[in-house]
Length: 240
Image 1 (tube, rainbow, N blue to C red):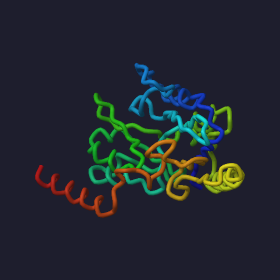
Image 2 (tube, rainbow, N blue to C red):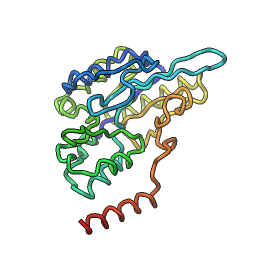
Image 3 (cartoon, rainbow, N blue to C red):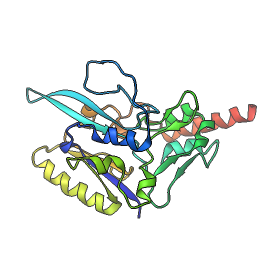
């Protein structure tokens, strides 16, 4: 059965253990950063930082509050990035049949990066400017296939990050949602049936990040727009 993450944002303390563990396991270098007036560091995802804890300050009931959003690839059940990548090479972006993980290979170097990135409703893919390879979270598929949890889940000290069989995680998410709604009536699960990384939001998802869930994403393509992009892509290939 496919796997799923359940991310309980009510329990995140922004310790960034998940962010560090990801870099350690993937052997990703630290980034040179500057003070941007926020504890968030770095300012955005990159090919070297494929998961990032985002910080957002809000005022709730007259009090200042912090929202923390550990962002990563959502591993869409039907990944639009793969649909776009398949136009050039169906073997560049793979979907693991056992876990459902969406995995980018070295062959992504030959893909249309702008097309792949714009197809993602969460704006996740990033490209190495030197190698041209496209990067993102791969669900720590090497660990999972060897019976281990993803590094971010293994490291999380608060119970924010959870990982397991799809049915198990959805049961946990729905049960936890009912608990949280007693204090936060507007709490929701983000895109629970479309992705393999399901977040529990206790505030409006837009408060956490503008691309937290797919329906809030400003540049999410409609089917008509996707078809137009595909047709334009095919015409350009024929001219080449």
